Image 1 (cartoon, helix red, strand yellow):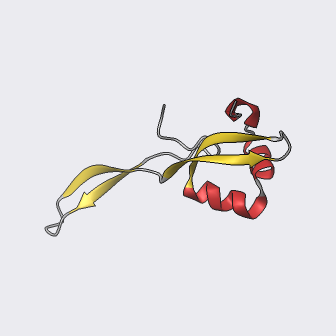
Image 2 (cartoon, one colour; image 1 turned 90 degrees about the vertical axis):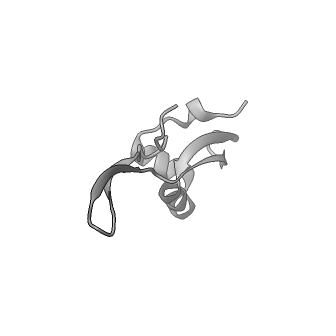
Amino acid sequence: MARRCQLTGKKANNAFAVSHSHRRTKKLQQANLQWKRLWWAEGESFVRIKLSTKALKTIQRKGLNTVAKEQGVDLRQFVVA
């Protein structure tokens, strides 16, 4: 599975690691992804989803169902059996 937030689509960023002598080498800045099991009230079940921590803070503020609708994500595919 790709290292990508399943709700927002956030992924790694290309960047440079800059040394003291200002020599630049390429590196990847990975998104801070966490597996979370969240209660989905509308579906009356738990969903297990890989989220960025930024998306997790947004969910705490707005609610899971609202954020999923804004992003156009169907939460039924993440339902835990």
